[in-house]
Structures are given as structure tokens and as C-alpha cells.
Image (tube, rainbow, N blue to C red; front, side, top):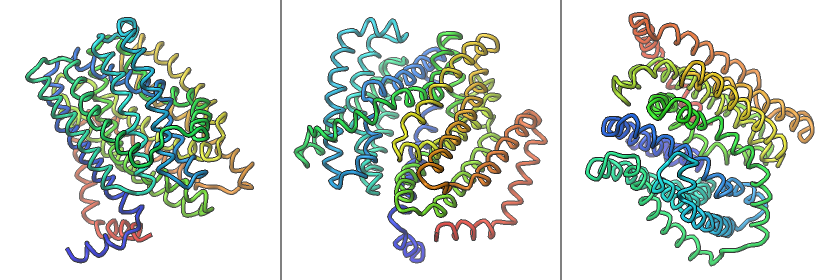
Length: 477
């Protein structure tokens, strides 16, 4: 124990933050994994599908209402030394925008309800949620940037656990509806948001800063098509399935998507430190180190996704039970889409760092439009399963286009220097795709599947020391 403590104490701040963000993400996902099977059993497939549709609208409307201004914070930190003043000013702008939209949402709640396919109560929950989620996003990014992981982990877990367990109580004892589930989450973020707003504004006494407000608006508004396009690729499929197939199919797809996106518990934790790390290494010119770290992260993500794909049937059964088991077949394309979603962010962040807004927007809009068209055509022809394949196809294309624009930035601004090991990324990507194709064929041949799993476990056991040494070496670096 003393040895482990000494090793922990010698870790750099980014390594400690990455470790604790990973722990936090596992705990968040653990809470979700515990509560999702409860919700899928307490709620009918129609109500669970309605809540999944609500979450999809929550994602896109949050971007529109808040303009995703928190994404300008890291660029503002490059220009301003007073990080807390930047945080307070951006939060002031977020509060102003979301307050205006709250009045609009309440006033026009019936019209929004008809447009979104939700009840008026769910519409009110949405706009209250936006006001307080906005400050949580800004505060979280600030804490990640300065590697202050203790407070953010505490608040994040409080929100996750409070929302989940209060949601269970509401669904169980008030009414088994999507409204009860949404009201619980809204109440928890309301309490946390009030505390965060008060602490931020009290500390800096800053609400308005003309320069910061103008930069944040000028940075994020031109990128809104890109952010909205990301939503189209990530979540619009659920909305389209709701309109074209019904809320029950949304529930089936949502359970499969939750299973296929389990890797996000790791990638979100990694990105919490890797995104600031990426900015810092680009700024310092340590390109070779950045390339090695990117390959290590991608290899790790690929291995984890392969594990999720091969255990897809078991994961779906745990999440939803037998009534959701037919959704197993879409997990492989969902996992491949998740992988390329992660890869494209590596290239897109380089463009965002150098404020190449146009090259970020163009591929986003093109692939989003393509995704909508393909979804409309193939969901009508083949059912909700088609959404997983169209999304994977669009993410792969999205990644390719962003890579081409990334190369353009390297040629024009870095004298041709490469920030990433492209050959390594290509090999890892090919390996994960081949694994996915193979798993599609063996997933229904249970004796073959479990034989392969057993062989893999034996290989890991035999080579465990080599793996442990490799991990230790990486941690030292």
C-alpha cells in the first residue's frame, strides 16, 4: 500500500486528474448500469422511448439555447490569464441567454409541445434544465482545465446519483411516466446550478465583460452548424425513429445505443484531461509526444470497444431484459460509430485550436445532411436498425474529411509538421473494423463466441506480465 501511495504522490497533475476522472466516469456509468435495468422494467417501452426522445431534444436545444459557449473557454484561456474572471463572464452570458429562453419556453410551451412531440410539462422541464446545466458545463470545463478534480468529481456524482435515485423514487411512487423521470433530473440540476452560480459570481464579482462576451459569441455562433451537425450524427436518429417507427422502437434502439456507448465512460474521462493536454502540447510544440499519447489512447479505446461488441448480447440482457434482446444486432455498428466519433475529435480540435471555423463547419454540415437523408430512406425501408449503420457510415466519412482539413492546417501553419502518427491511427482503425465484422458473424454462434472469449482470456493470463509492464511504462511516461 505504501508503494502505491508513493507512486500516486509522484504522478503529475494531469495523470492524477485522468485517474480520478476515470474513477468518476466508472462510478457514473456504474450508477447508470444499476438504474437503467430498473427504469426499463418500471417504465413501459413507450414511456422509456418517450424519455429517450426527451433526452435527444434536451441535447440539441441545450446547444441552441446556450450556444455551447462553454466551448470557447479554453480558447479564452489562451488569451486571458485570469481564468476565474473568464469563467464568471461566460457564465453571466449563459445565464442571460437561458433566462430569455426560459420565458419564451414557458410562454410558448403548448406550441413547443406539439412541435417536439412532448407534453407541456416536459417542455417546461427542458427550459429550466438548460439554465442550470449551462453553468455546470462552464464550471466543469474550468475545473478540468486546472486539474481540480476533487470538487468536480463530488458535484458530478451528486448530480448523477441524485438524478438517478430520485428518478427511481418518482417513477415508483408518483407515476411510471417519462414526466416523473424528467422532473427528478430537473430538480437536482436546479439545486446544483443555484449553488454554482452563487459561488462563481460571489468570488469574482464579475457578470459582464464586453471583450469576453464578444469573443465567446464570435467563436461559438459560427460553429453552431458544426455543433448541431454533431447532434444530428449522435442523437437525431432517436428523434427520427420516434417519428417514423414509434416510441417503442426508440426504446429498443436506446438500450442498444446505451450498451454500445459504454466506452464513453472511459473516453469522457480521458477527454477530460486529454483535450486540455492536447491544447498544451500543441502550444509547446511537443508534437511527437502528442502523437504517441494519441495512439495509446486509440488502441485502448479499440480494445475496450471490441470487448463491448463481443459481449453485446449479455450487456443488452442486463440493461433491458428479454424484451430488448432483438436490439443486439445494432451494437456493432454503434460501437464502430462511437470509435470514429472519438477519432474525428482529435483532428477537429486542431482546427478549433487554430480557429479554423470554416473547415470545422463544412464536413459537419455535409455529413449531418447525409445522415438525415440516409436515415429517412433506410429507416423507412429497413426499420430502426438502419439508423446504426447510417450513423457509422457518416462518422467514418466525417472522420476522413476532418483528417483532410487537419492536414491542410499542418501544411499551412506548421510547415508540414504532423501532430499525429497517421499510419498508426489507420492500422488501429482497420483492426477495430475487422474485429467488428468478425464479431457480427460469430455473435449468434454461441459455442464459437465463448471459445474465442476463453482463448482470449487465457492469452491475457499468460501474457499478463507483459501487459502490466507495458501499462507501467506508459504511466511512467
